[in-house]
Image (cartoon, rainbow, N blue to C red; front, side):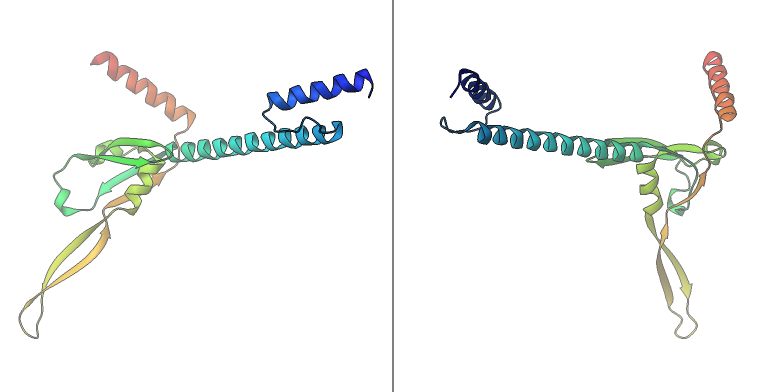
Length: 178
């Protein structure tokens, strides 16, 4: 073996040691190169898959936190006098997300922005409606129970740039007056 080949083999052994690649001291140069290349490809693939997972988690978070403009009305007659409700959602993707949802039509007349994760919860929330109806056959009262959506939600289009500027101006004047 020549001196250059011996130095090359020693460099490969040092590189394998740095990369924590187990190898035999008597391993040939080509076998050691192949083992190092395989280890580097595996490492690159695992880093790529970690990046893909991070990207998918970021996309899931962005989708959950995307604001949806809604007009909200509470249909539950038991909550007729309640001015609003704090909704809190827990998720592995977002953690805890809380938002006050006003039921007063004045708040949501022009739309009220809520995160998409809370919108999905509001859309699926139900309450049990009970109505009493008298029957003619035996004179007893009949209770009719049915599950209904708790909220009437109207999804509005996002604000335009001009509407955002107008809203910012209104909020600014309200802050300086208060």
